[in-house]
Image (cartoon, rainbow, N blue to C red; front, side, top):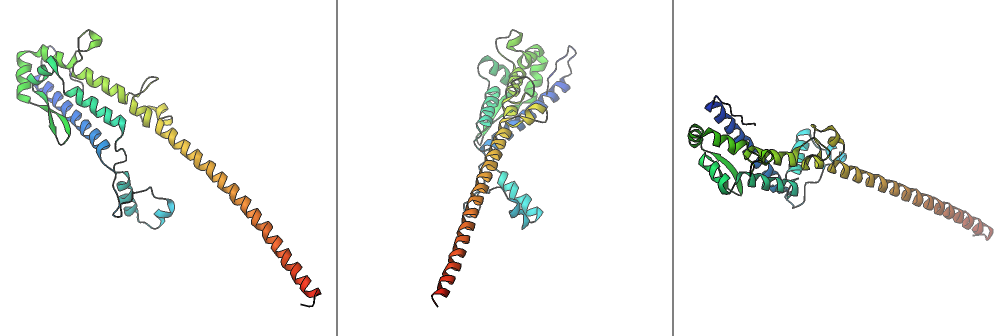
Length: 247
């Protein structure tokens, strides 16, 4: 969410916007961390949940199929390097050091670490006090950017650069995740992305091997047919010979 400051300050509106931003950022951080740190599930015998074939589904109910596929998809992004990098970038963005970090902490915006996860914490009382005593400083902490001549980026400029890096649907070079998996917000990337191209390559390989197997089947079928004909001829010749010899 965009945080906007006006000459006639509405503290409640600003506080609500910052709260929403903190909640949204924490949700993203948790989802990203969970996506790449959740391990795939295993069956009781230690085997993996492989994708179901059409033949598998014929003997299963709809609910059983849904349950199985949910388990099969669990941990599908385990150890994904792009998501791991995104989490690290987000963590670094909120774990601000130096004077910028001190400024954010003084206005009630800091971080919390628990169970391997770093999230943002928001002290509303401290933020309201900072907003009351020095609103310009609060505004600068959020909105300043190096593109506008500042020495460092504010919180929102930092987040904007991260979201552009990973999720921008525009431009010749789109966000890392868009290039990898496509997006409904980027029609061109939805039809041309890394995962889709890999799937097409696999489908082409499957088709190629199916053609090879079909050719092999035809080859062996012809050979077996020829052998069968020769064996029939031999049997006929043996029978004829036996007859001539009075056998």
